[in-house]
Image 1 (cartoon, rainbow, N blue to C red):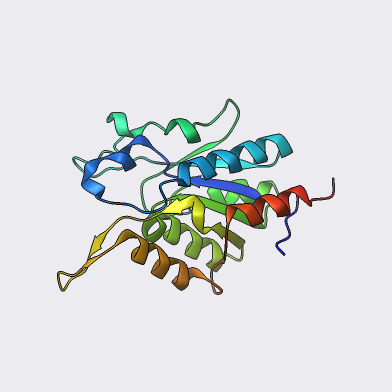
Image 2: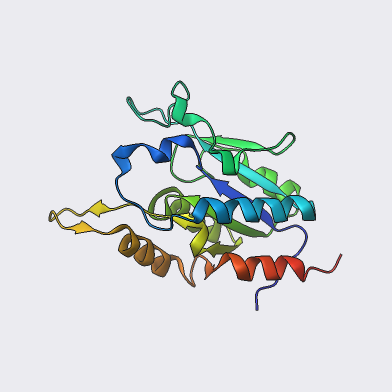
Length: 191
């Protein structure tokens, strides 16, 4: 069974309108946004730390650019007043941001990570967090991947991309789990 403390932070990565742009192609986990909303609700009720990561792309034509409508958060993951937003320009939320300092200030050692894309910003952030010594829990049903074409031209289905990315992160960088298990651990915290 998973265990959490009241200092465990929920990191919601790049859940912005831009991810619905058709350029990304087919995805898996169509219920991920609902699970993210459930996690946010539980963290808010427990009054535990939440951080929203917003990708502010500098790439020309990116739907994540700050001057594009896609930069806005999806309704299920919209920050509430007082919830910190960390703007990032790279895939890892720790590069050129104050995320690590914010976590240190709060005494946070455990991160619960959700969002998009499993094989991009989620994996980069999880690997970076693991290398910095954070304990990372990743509910696999609260993130998603998209189809990826490899360098040989083979198209990998989103679910395969998702599962491979999870397998690479498991153990060395994170504990792969499910939303239900995280919620059970949250409910078991002694206050």
